[in-house]
Length: 99
Image (cartoon, rainbow, N blue to C red; front, side, top):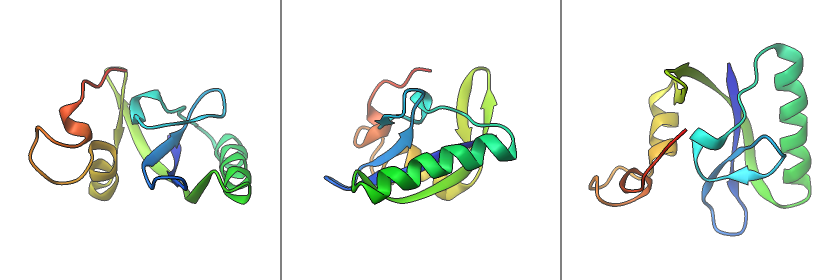
């Protein structure tokens, strides 16, 4: 399973491609793609958004879904999903996250 991620060009925030083609700041709101064709189509949609200068650095990333929650596989992606590695009361990790 994969999600499509990038950085918002306007402010640099990490974002994920959502169900309606929008870019969201919470991985829990991202659309999960399964299968080579679905991932390729989603990646093409992300690259189109990059071409239109909405986001930059579009790529697919591996995730699992555990008890209905999207969980990044790699450490780098876990850090991108939770925010900077600072105090737990700062960054995305300080905000309430729900699926």
